[in-house]
Amino acid sequence: GEHVPAKLVGKALTFDIALLKVSVGKKLKPVFLGDSDALEVGEWVIAIGNPYGLGGSVTQGIISARARSINSGPFDDFLQTDAPINRGNSGGPLFNTKGEVIGINSAIFSPSGGSIGIGFAIPTALAKPVIEQLKQYGRTHRGWLGVKIQEVSEEVADSVGLSKPIGALVLDVSKDSPAGKAGIQAGDIITHYDGKEISEMRLLPRMVAETKKGATVKITYWRKNAAQTATLTVGELEESADGGDADKPEKGEKSKGKPAGETVLGLQLTPLTPALRQELKLDDDKNGLVVTDVASGSEAAKRGMREGDVILDVGGEATKTMETFKKTIETAKKAGRKFALLCVSRKGEEAFVTLPVSEK
Picture (tube, rainbow, N blue to C red):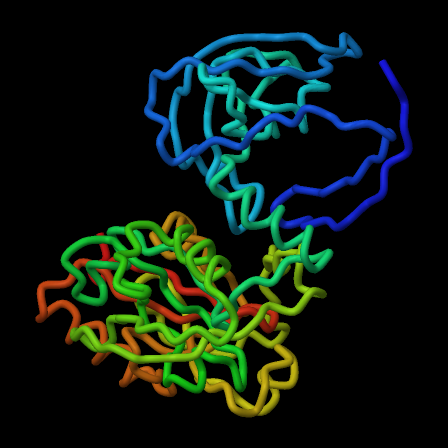
């Protein structure tokens, strides 16, 4: 029941963790951080917190799942539990039956705001190194490759000839970054990091974040129907980047003039002219075909293509003319591919989109 002032030692917004220090003039009995990696689904757990101001409330349940992603940030790796967690439980401990803290209660899914048996906790395996860095430096030191990535779907895997959807599709590479110096390019799919397979895209940011600055690692990536390897020296993510995701473009820029173009796969396309480049605010080093219209109900429309999008390349091949675009699509068909991978620029942001190579 004592109230004492606390000193903020450090905070890591991306991980939703802060470290506080208190001094009460006497020795306190600590709880111990257990090994969350040793947990199995079905094990009993106990949550303690302050739900609705009822301090010291205890609830019990089991571990429902591990390594859950709830789209809260780049390092999602939550424990899911059905132990009732309500507003006010956040920051409280999740104990195993040995009395060890194996998680920090963090979030719930609920249409009403109350517990419906779907709660989430930050595992100690993720929290421990963050806490140690906050204690030692007052901030986190995270590894950095310098790549912007996207998920590899079954359609993306088919379009590039991968046997299964694994890895992280590289959207962009920062200039003078470790990845850039190692020769990684947009369109590559990083499948292995330091000898470990990247079964899901979200695993790569955590693997990199946990790597010390200056460490030398080998990565395997897929480019032009073949696996390639590169060795690089991991950099450090700047403190200023700790907490914000890049803005996602919502709407495409509409072309005012609507120049005449040819329609392929539901897309009306026209070569990029100086006037269109200026209107779409496209850098001089970017070239491609401009989408001037999208057929209503087409696969292109369903997959989010918009007027004003600029198709930079298809399947890794630069697309400056309609002939190149159509030839690349035909090549994909002859190779037995069901989908083509398009690199699309929209309002300065680049993304990859898959389109069926045959129109229905």
